[in-house]
Length: 301
Image (tube, rainbow, N blue to C red; front, side, top):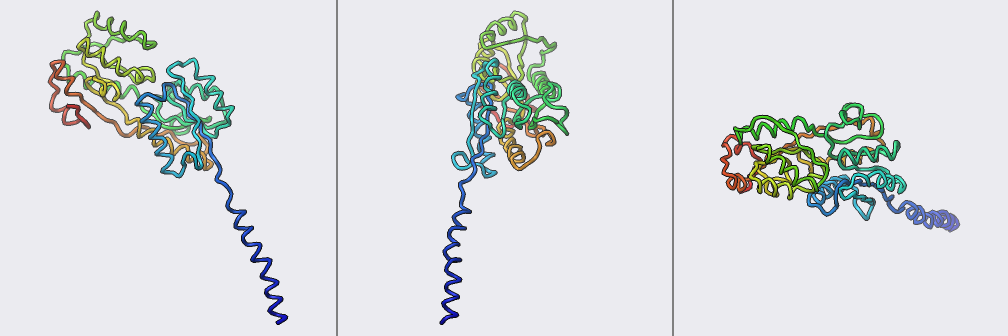
C-alpha cells in the first residue's frame, strides 16, 4: 500500500501538469500583415480578378485572411502622385511584405523602404526601368514576375499586319491621362491611321472601355490587352496577368520562410493568350485570316 500511495502521489502532479503543458502549446496563430499597393482602383474588374488570383495563391499555401493573414490595401485610384504617401503608410503599418502593382507602384514602394521585401506580380522590363539589377540576382529588396513589353508589342504588330495587310509605318501617340484619350484618337484619325495598338499601362487598363469605344467609333482595328478586347476591341495578345498574380503568392511564401528577395530570381511570364472579337471584326468589315483564328485561345462571337 505504501508503494502504491507513493506511485499515485508521483503520478498526481504529472497528471495535473499535462493539461497545463498542452494549453501552453495552443497559442493563437501569428497574424501576418501584408501590404498591397495598387495603382488603379479596387472596383475595376481587372483589379478584382487579379487580387482574387493573389488571394487564391496565398490560400493554396495556407495563408487565409482572418485566420493567419491580414491584407492591407492602398489604392491610388489612378493618381500616381499619391503612390509615395500610400507606400509610406504601408511602411508605417510595419507590413512584412509589400505586393506592388505596376512599375509605378514598385518604384514608389522601393523609394519608401529598403528593408521591407517588395513582390511585383506584373512588371514590364524591370531591369531596363532600374527596379532590379538583373533577373537572375535582383539584389536589393525587390523580386517577383515580369513580362517583356517589347516582345509582346512586336507580336501585336505582327497580328495587326496579318489582319490588316494595308498597315505599314508606325506612328506614336502619347496619352498622359484619361482626359487626353479623345484628342489622341482624333489625332490618329487625322493621320489616317489604319489600325491602333496600345501598351499595358495601369491607367490605360482602367480606361479599357473608353478606348475600345473610341476605336469602334472611329472604325479602327485595335489590338491590345485582354480588357480592351472584352470591351469591344478587335484582338488581344498578352501575358496571363491573373496567373502571374497567383504565382506572386509563391514569392511571398518564400520570403516569409526566410528567403531574401534580392536572391530570388525573377520569373518570366510563360502563358500568353490570343483573344479575337469576331463581332467587332464583322462590324469593321474585316475577315480575320483562318491562320490567326486557329491560333486563338478564345474567340468572342
